[in-house]
Image 1 (tube, rainbow, N blue to C red):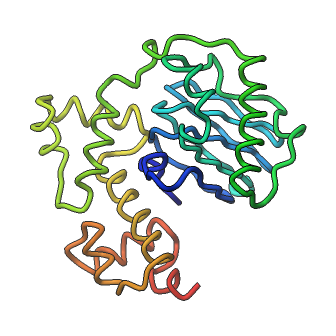
Image 2: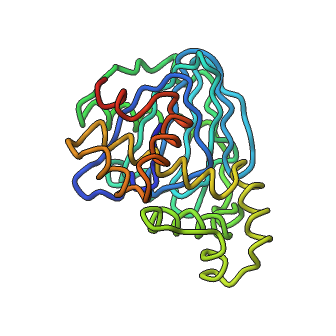
Image 3: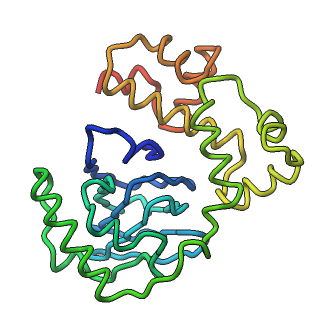
Length: 251
């Protein structure tokens, strides 16, 4: 369980490579390019409200700032590559203000061996080969025809900035000067989750990262992720992850 909004923003990090099993993600977006490689099972990838089914050997290629989500089966094995635009400057310059008509590249990974771990040069070579495949096999449309300029990106960005605070949808409605009921309905329609469920998922995602990569006490992590009550944090963590935070720290 990871949230990728900040990926592609860190000045010293050009890429992330993750390997996931059976994990699904609600709607999100970020500046970086995201490549999904299905290695086993099936994946339902939704980009700008268009859903496609990916099978083993397929790649999903999501462009910068495209809103997307994916639903994985429990046995789905997935490699996720998050690539900063600075890693692919020539490609990024060529596709400015464009997005592909389809984000699914059928069988593209079968012809391109994906190592479990790659150096910067290997990653760049692998990614540019896939970029060439995309440019020579896909049609494009202007990015302005997508929904990325609508309300949802503003809502998600606001949440990423304020999730550590005791925020509510009513506050967000006031901030954006929109009706609360309208935003509530829109949020569920676009993400498939209620505002509070999404906020909790985001907070627990950040907590899981802190548990794995810092020595902060669990109570401090709970506080940093927006929980005033350790009991509430433990309950919500178990609900999302299936185990208490103490078990995550031990593993």
